[in-house]
Image (cartoon, rainbow, N blue to C red):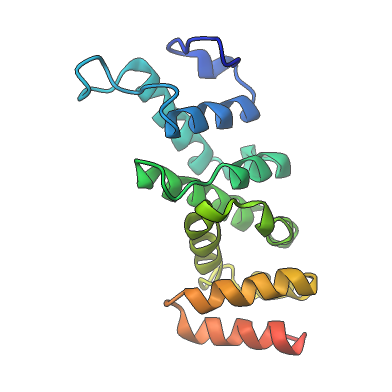
Length: 180
């Protein structure tokens, strides 16, 4: 969708994933309003926005690596509707969980792509969710393949997370020792 185009209901159906992510970003920034004139009811664009969001969350397999990179670059913790950022973090996590080690490695290798003002949602939530029971062992394997710079970023993130204390310490030990 070009900047000079006006969003029309249903446009998302003809969009590529990249265009859908741009659409989400434009909603996040207020470039595309999701409310009717009075400001309280969702417009058709608002309904479509939630359909796109729900699609990406429900179907993590639909997002390719480049789509994840695109999402990482648009995180903005200052977004006026913070739950949208939370949903993007869920998209990243679910995609990593779906594709496993290779996608977790990709995510970790691109942590620096997350803007500074988006790191709370772009770093902390996906990492802490990856520390959960179902993905923790794969996260540890992926960490072992990271550069020293990425490991330093991970240590910084872990210092700022206050959940999964046991897993956090175990992951720090993996990073520091270089073994699982």
